[in-house]
Image (cartoon, rainbow, N blue to C red; front, side):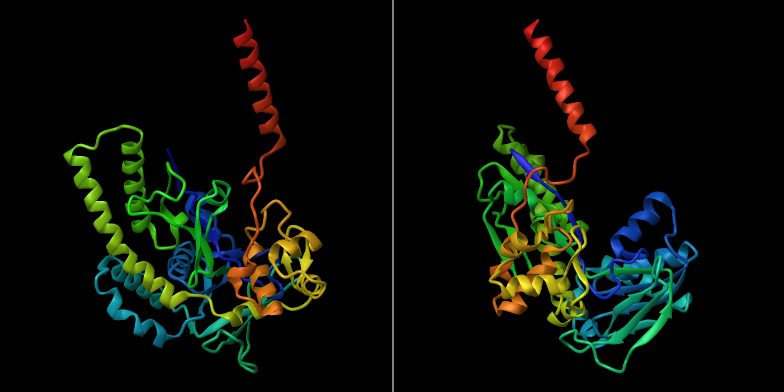
Length: 368
């Protein structure tokens, strides 16, 4: 049995200047603060949509950074509409109030219904421009504000790491709010491939508590599959985890309703904006490939090399899919067809050489 719990990564959003040094993902900034105790900047904007913005902004404030604002694509009204659905998640409300109070005490401005629309600088980001956006997250002209910054943390939620489920040929379905393909699974978290289980963000974005519940379910089910009998205590643990999972799915649906990306945010990138950072392929080059007949991400990949770099399309795949869908008039779900290739993540040559050496040594020992 195999349990795939490969996690997720920050959803990239492209805009002019998004490849400048000093433009970080919100998750990357949080990881740096937690693991290294390093503040990656001093004058900071935190921007995007999702529950990660507030804890990241709070952590930056507590680490001594000057947070110039939290820029939220969603509006206060949209937050208020979801309040009643959060009543069964008191721990989430407690966390939210803590972050709100810390940011209020630090006098960090909040810009609801806004987005970072460009970044400027030479050796790194020096200025960031925000603007008001409408319900489709399209920029409202004339509302721009500029900030002198050395760090911009962008967080528009997460995308699940789907390379392993795809390589294992698990049946997938398209999640319209999260804008990604996810593996189908039963109540025991087993996929369409017998013996392959999924858990956590691999099944969709829903938070740490949901991930833990799914991990317990998948682990117990996998153990049962390979012959380990589940005693009464383990069966009770399985039932409790199933109940917790059903409860936490309610929180996941709130995230989907409140923070689902709207199409306007994908229009920030200009013709000269690179979408594929690894291969430096711009919006204009992708549009040209579409005009020459590329009607899917895979076809555009063959024509332009998008998705052929070290990230294998993890960064650009979603962005290219939205551009191709817009240019062709097709649904995103029909053009999102990048296929991963092993190795799933870049592997240093020294590691491969070490594996070869280990294999030779083992063969020699077997022969003797």
